Structure formats: structure tokens, C-alpha cells
Image 1 (cartoon, rainbow, N blue to C red):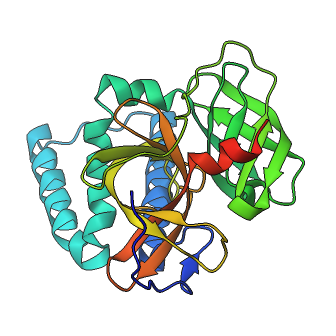
Image 2 (cartoon, rainbow, N blue to C red):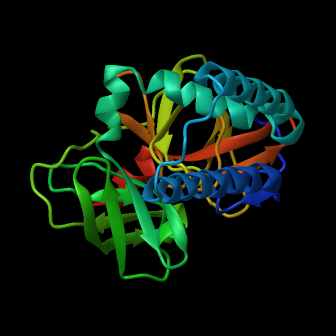
Length: 274
């Protein structure tokens, strides 16, 4: 892909992948409400059974359906359409066999300061993530979808390109192969999987826009036309061959393209990791 000569807005960059605050706030409220509902249901089951209501069950289901319809009618006024669409897209993609396989290698990385995403790139379980996800820590907690929790040790760091390698005690682990170099056409769809907001294992797709420069990097990074949110830091960008061509690290307000995701080409990792 050729570099463009256009000048992009380079100053407004979200290093920890923040989207609109209202989106995150709504997700938190929904999660709190869900937990509260689960607790109430648990408490109800612990109590003695009450006499059955004289009203038929279908009557209550009718009320529930009407309430759900009203909630979804109000959602577009409260949360941006892209924030709704990225969940719908993930649900559709997650039914595909290739996405199910990719998800086995994508992990949650947690520290006292927050959480992000990473992925294994060899059968020993070595994990590639962003430097800013593990910055300031020698050990982190790593969570796999199927393999459970591990203690990860920060093995290598490359702050200049915001990449880091975390090592776990694992053998024969699922992993995503790395492409030898980033080669991609702008109209070819790609996938990325991460842990945005308070969700885990969210799959999404998008297209590559072009290279761009940002003030925090000496080398060009790649713009991605896709919904990227806080927590997607470290998400693998996967091509149609199932190989990782880059690592999501930030979002950018671009004068021409609007809010876009940014990822680091996999070449930068190969140049540094031995």
C-alpha cells in the first residue's frame, strides 16, 4: 500500500482507546442492572414459593416484550448507532468456525490499572500486546477463553512501537500465526477480536484505509475503518488467510475519515523480536 501525502490531524489521539463517555457509561449501567437482576432472582429463589398469580404467564410475557420494544426504541437516542452495531456484528461473526478458532488464542490482560487484550503467537503461549497495557508491571493476569487464568511475566517491551511480549507457563497452546509482513488492499475486509468496554471476546470486521503518521510514533501506522473502543488495545488484526497483520493500539479523530482505529503493522514487531 502506498503512503498518502495528505496531512492528517495528528494531535487528538486516545492512547487507551476511549470512545464517547456516554457509550461506556451506558454499558456500565446495563451491566449493573443485569447483576442486580440476577441477585434479585437469586434472592427470590431462596424464599418460599409464593401463591401463583391468577394471571396467565402469557400476560406477563406480553408486558415484558412491550417493555423490551420500548427500550430498543429509546436506545438510539442514548447510545450511538455504531456502538449498537458492533455488538450485532460480533454476534454474527462469532457463529463462523474461523472466528471461533481465532478466539481461542485471544486473551484478557488485567493489571491493577485496568485491562486490555493480547493474543498468543506461538504454541508456548507467548503473548503479544501493547506496551501501554502492561506499562509499569512485571507480572499480569492473563485469561483465556478455554484455558483459564495464568500469571504472565513481561518478557520484552518495545515502547517506541507500543508493543510488548508477555510469557506464560504453557505448552501446546492455541495461537494465531503472524504474517511475515503487512500486505493488504484497502477493499479487503479484515477481522479483529478484543475486549472492548466491559465485554470479552468481541469480534468485529472492517477495512484498511491507509497509512498515517501520529505524533507519538516515528513510523507510519495504519488506519482502520472499524469500531474500536477502550479495551481493544492489543487486539490482533487478522487477514483472510487467518494471519495477524497488525495490532490495534489506539483511535484517532481524522479530519477526512472521522473516528478511526489505528494498528501497528506486524513488520515492526518482526524487526525487534528475536
